[in-house]
Image (cartoon, rainbow, N blue to C red; front, side):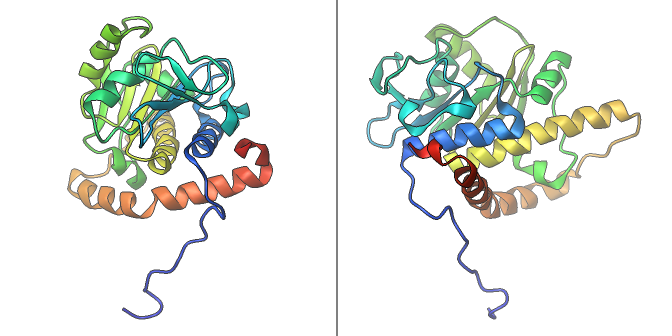
Length: 248
């Protein structure tokens, strides 16, 4: 391998972040990508030591969350660390976490275009190469059963989510799952862009062509190797430069 093609170190974030700082950054980065809906939404991250869940606080907007606002809760929603209360809709996350080792991070909110597709009952389409990361991992939960406020309702939802990592909820919003915070940030950005492009393509009146199935596996592997960390590093560098209080 010559000097031109040899791997080179990336710029990185520029500092080490703990899990509460990373979750605070994830909330603000995804909000910038269209995932904010004022008071709504929650992100959970499995704690590596205890197996409990880090989550944002109810009533603290994603855009204003700092590291010290982030909570650690058990699977009954009892706060172990942090000053605030957790959301009552906590069980949207718990039963997905229980059954899927790959879903270390679960993001839920009502991004506009994903929610619009949910109103229409339309699945996002893989119209661009970057969307291949969701190949064979998309599902529309084409039922509305109200809010998810207990374990039984969480089980109902998890049954319908299955192994998907990009989920549209009819008349509700969206869920994205990922094995890491870095991948969750990247996939959330792609997911809402995919939903917007799907809507724009469908309403354009032209025939939109999906990426051919034969290309999807190779694209998916290449994207997952190259993009999550690089996206995260750049997004967090810019966030910290403009909003350094996020780490407090």
